[in-house]
Length: 319
Image 1 (cartoon, rainbow, N blue to C red):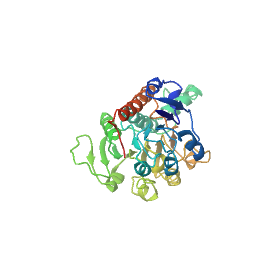
Image 2: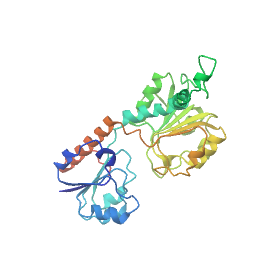
Image 3: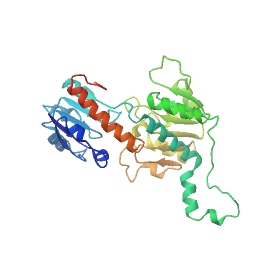
Image 4: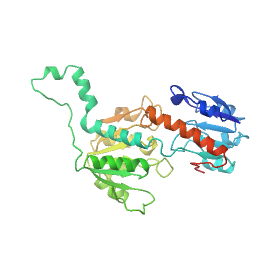
């Protein structure tokens, strides 16, 4: 059984794959060039099991890997794999749907609190001796906002969003949500509304949907126009959910108060990204998923998925 891990750098540097090595002959790559299709094909040409994090596996790649029977995605989103092609070629694909729910919910509020409480800014100013130079016991350089009684709108209402809803209640926020497939169960944490109502009523909007053709550029000039003036937008889902030129315009015109995101359209970010020229834009380098404990859980579930597949009872199958 030949197993190939295409891009394990984020886990390889401080976690151990020895349990996967017990399941077959393993080849580990820290990184695989995502734009070099020939190299991807070369690396998986005789593999039966392939594990990928962000290395894309499209129809051309999958169809040229004749021994391939299983693809394990090290994450929740599965846009890096052509699912239709996998199905056509009888390749089982699994993902890891809930490994980072707590970490991403925590990080969602880290972004929101940075935008509203300005901890990073004022910490820097204190270290630059700005506080020592004022005559008062206090000072602030940007407005500080309180979350109590603000309306938090969640676009998407899966595991992460439901945890975000709980945290929102802890801050005495009113929570509403929109889900493309209406939830049939009553929820005491959040009120279900239409997308237009969510855009109209929310003081804070947080994105929690996967990237699909339908959700690409969900946030654009048209949807932004329906939002409150001064809305805060959070994104810990996918960068391509947001039209970055449109959000830059909205930020610079003060329609949107702040955009706080852990993801961007092209990762790593381009040096000429429009977001880098936008006011009140907070950007972190796709780290919501990255606490040690979360990555350790990711590794363990990845191995458990492979083990379940080999036993004939695959779990977390998405095709």
